[in-house]
Length: 312
Image 1 (cartoon, helix red, strand yellow):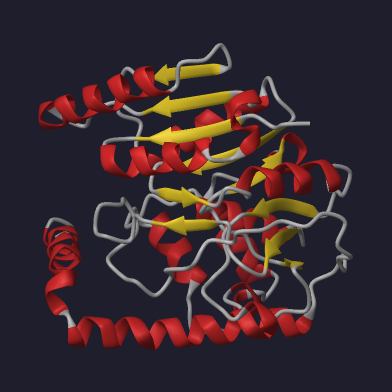
Image 2: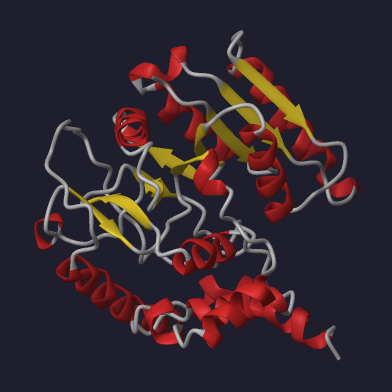
């Protein structure tokens, strides 16, 4: 059973072209339903870019299975994704979700559809992640394994799992604090998901993903991960909404998929330790990136300054 593919796009034509090219290399793409949510421009300066995006979609996604939904006004990243998924799950019981800055393995859809079909009746499984951090695959317990975590770079879920999504970040924060789960929420790793959640409350980021993670975390739900990534994120180039420049998360694409591999239906502590170690490494590596190549961070610094300046 092929699940519908949901694509969210805004104004990055080159990124979108790469995504579609890689998606078409997947065998089941031609027989899959594709729904694209194209957000509208924030101002007149973006009007030309949005037209290019929509013209490109109409030219390159010519199929009875394709539906292009053009937003009439700018919703922004979170609202476009949240409302788009709500609309999708009014019709379908599962979906594969992509943003326009991803490059996919030719085996991405096979892995995703297999996971969605296999774990559809497991109430404690929140999602299927196509991405894995650039870690030696041999360090993990299996080719595929579970973590009490989510990843939003090429993922999939079911209608029943998405019902657990809580959009109120303040409510999520209060519940994490009340249950004294702050350390566990951050994986005790040096990467502060809790800070991301606080920043979302204060309007410093527009992340739906941190709320999705908090929602599934509080429900003790798991996500299936591959030991080698089926997704490469190309948006860490200062063009994204919430992601600044870095090459820490660059990864090679997995060029194989094997079915019917034994998987433990619990989070394995050794796998969690591998991820925790990578997060601790990445925190200090980003400091090193900034010190050795500060020009790459200029856009981020200017953006941060504007937020601070105009908040007074």
